[in-house]
Image (cartoon, rainbow, N blue to C red; front, side, top):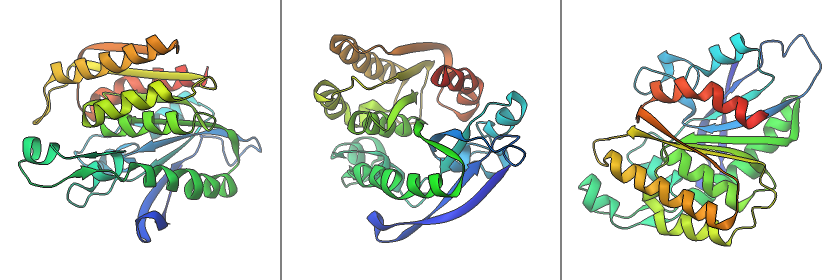
Length: 256
């Protein structure tokens, strides 16, 4: 069962954002409470007809068929211009515009405000509206969503202690995210999963760049002594269909 509503983001001058909540198959029949998985790019998570490119992650079908005791909350991305880069980029990037997008300008830098909205507005609302386990909060995203998920984990590991970062666009803020990982106290982290495909070519960034970027971040975690699962997916593409295929196992891994 999917419920939809809009929430104002005060950090973005009251801009409204679509929220999609997928409830467990037996939510209305039972009285128990559930952990919550928050995910970015909410329009792509549940139904193909809502997805930006016609293919979703299929997570509504997954919850129903697997009977996984989990609430999944999807936050739609900002479709206006390159606002998705701005909101999922924790730090400004002065080169991605002219070098990759062929448009002048500085992108990124709104990621902190976006996570503040998730933490201080959306999570309390979800905890009040639904039967949740507030202390069991998971977070996941892909590409730029993987970058902002990793950032949130480093900033608030006591809240986001089970996190998955798929096909991560760490390259957008490579030096900054590595520095944040090094200086963050991650002792409370329970589970962190990251992966990258060998065929992650996008129109702007090739697969080798994606792989090197993730391998470098993984090395930072290893030197810090943090237990991280890092999978390199043979033939993995930068596409919802690829994330749809491996997300069920990832969810089970986060919840174990």
